[in-house]
Amino acid sequence: MPPFRQRTRNEPLLGKAGLRLCFAALALGYAGVFLHFVSGHLGSPPEEPPRKLLTSAELGNELVPPLRPALAPLHAPAFEPAFEPARREERPHDNVPGPVSEAAQAAVARVGVLRHGGAQAAPAAPPPASPVAGPTDAAPPQTPSLAARGRGGGAAGPQRSAKPKSKPRSVADKVVARALLALAELAPRRLEGALNTTHGTDFFGLAALERGGCPSGELKWLPERGPQEPAARFRNRATAGAQGGRAVMVWYEHLSKAGGTSFCKLAGKNMKRKEVPSYYCMPSEPGMPDARVGQWSNAKLQAYHARTGELLVSNEWEPFPLERLEMQSVAKQPFANGGGGGGTRGGAASGLDKPLALDLVLVTSIRDPLNRLVSAWKFWGVLHNPNKQSPPPAGRWLRNMEARARQDAQSSRGLGKGPGSGRDFIARVGQANFATWKFSGGTLPTPPAAPPAGKAKDEVDFGSWEWRPAFERAVLTLCRFDLAIPMELLSGQPGPVEGLLGWRDFSVTHVVPSGKVVNTDAAQVLGRDFRRFWDANRLDLVLHAWCKAVYLARLNCGV
View (tube, rainbow, N blue to C red):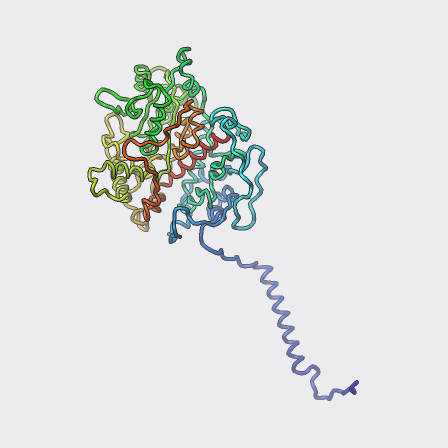
């Protein structure tokens, strides 16, 4: 052991190295206290999202606060739009929510969410805390047979989900209309995510429905079923007529280039020749193969049925006459004056001084709106264009048709403006949101010719364009229809048509009045114009997705 050396008087106690260690320890102590104070009072800074692509969390969290509760459970991975080959550049209006009315906000907050499984499905778990959650891993339910489904119109299958019947039909229809209105009010990018069935939030749950699934719980977008007795009389018309029952007729609202010719061919295969008008199911008068039944009063339609005995008529060019809703079996006041509630059938709006003796079964077909527009271009802009040598491209032709529709709307003799009007019968077939115009009774105004400052040249300004009342009326009208057929589904899933009308021969489900049958791919045909027309037709996109969801819910579950 080395000998102990006593410290001299002038020698420091710790030395230079020891002092450095002391100062370092003291500095670390103060730094720890400071960091503890900052973290306790200010919190950790939020992490930046890894990318700016739309996610379901953004869909729920970046919307205005009243919409968050309804869309919070709809988590899905970030996605690129299915119709875009590459990520497009952001535009200013894509990242801000559109104007949403208070009534519409309240409606979306009550919208049900489609879940996998049938009536026995367990309650949905709360959404995960992660801002991006993957789709559910639950296996889709087995597709029930048509017999189990009730063929879309009969008894419920084993997976049928209960739906409360406490609300009157008119009240339930308004709930549906408000929910769809709020969806249509979303900015284009968010609406795109809400309708996407693979990587988006799939608002209507179409991915599960297309696999044969059934909704669990109450769905606010599912309209109440109307009376089934008129359709039953139509199916059993041979015996019903002999027993002296009330007369019944099918009214088919034909959206041009949405399967109307195919529907008429099916009618010819499943009905007697004398029951169907010979000219594309349109009633005729002397000198008029197409007598424009959309301009008739209810009284004239009833007299025509009594004189000819025909049981199906088709209206293609005019907008749907709202007074036809008075010819359903449930007594309603004239729809054009507010609709809903009690009242007597007939009256001044019908042109009758006594109750109607004819019930209508209302049927239509609907198609993807962009594919319908491209089909209209192929038929009217190419095949039947006088200038066959150099027909215009699809985008240019559709822009010209929008200007033509605007002129028709400004004319006092335009489509839907009384008997003898609408000589330019194809003036509307190429306009945006054609289905909304049709089912609103022609009340949808055309967008302004020129966008306001700050908008792209061809961009529709939904903020300054008053489309909401007409869209709501279109939804209310379709709620009253007995069947809206998505033509993309008819050939493989005809159950609802068979259940409603009793037709069984579906050997011909896709025909055209002239030319060849060609499948339409709007994204390929429109190219760079596709985004522009997608944004402009968002009202019809919502209607089409909704009609598909209702059709499949009726088919799968008998609801």
